[in-house]
Image 1 (cartoon, rainbow, N blue to C red):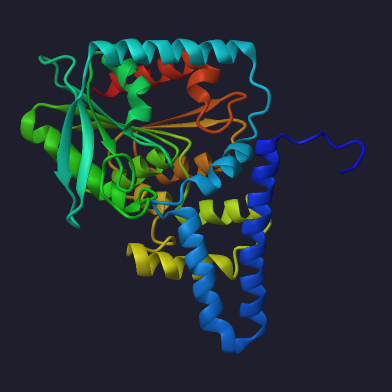
Image 2 (image 1 turned 60 degrees about the vertical axis):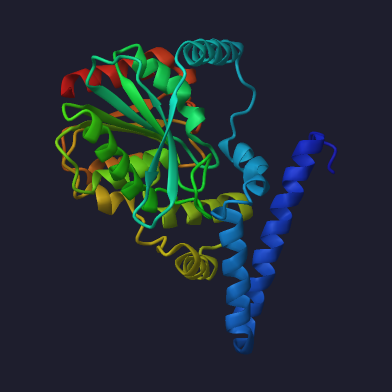
Length: 345
């Protein structure tokens, strides 16, 4: 370690070691692949399996946690933000103590048993929100936002996306398979409340799920879609993270990863595109992104915003890292959301 380099904590050393090991495994396999034609299939399978395990396999979430936290580059959290987080936590706990959710289930198109939480806070209201959680999270992580919507007269159905929480699934859907699951949850709400006016709201991977859902044929009950820091496509996000976390090029790793994911999960990372889905969108949309997002780069929001041929608004939150806009500038964040929602309900 150089004299001017700061000492690393135990967690930081562990994270750095994990990143070096991942990079070494992928790099060694890539060298074998490109230098020895006889090992093409073997090396390709090694790379693909390793990436699948690293990125979307359900039982391997912990390996990336430190890397993803460091990728957000939040740095020293100001006291005012810490205070906001504590206030939000207290607000959420008060809400969940007063309103206990009902556990609900849905069978997916591919016969998975999916789980969700239903908050019937306002029995006489036809306002509903479907909050969608991010990567390596689950439905309960969205209860704070559920509580904020409940203040505005909304009931909520909060899914555990496939491969998360109490929902079945061997892999994380990255928004692509999840989009059809969300359509199923929409119809479940309408079956119980035909007059429902539904808002879809997602953060990070949940935001990508919301955008991919926007490209499906949706009932008129869906009044608005809000996405906060979603990616342009799964391929774009994986390519960015390969470079950002491991300093690796997208070729040959990404095509081999795509092959493994197609074999195991049944979809292509190149097919799973928010941009392409948004071109078919018909529902009004609000796009939100943190100005200092280094996990899903801020530049992506301009591409998804441009792709949507709908009534739309764009909100860039100053100084906010990834998935942090709601506590960096909470007043602007929620006033922007509910101003947009009220306009379209």
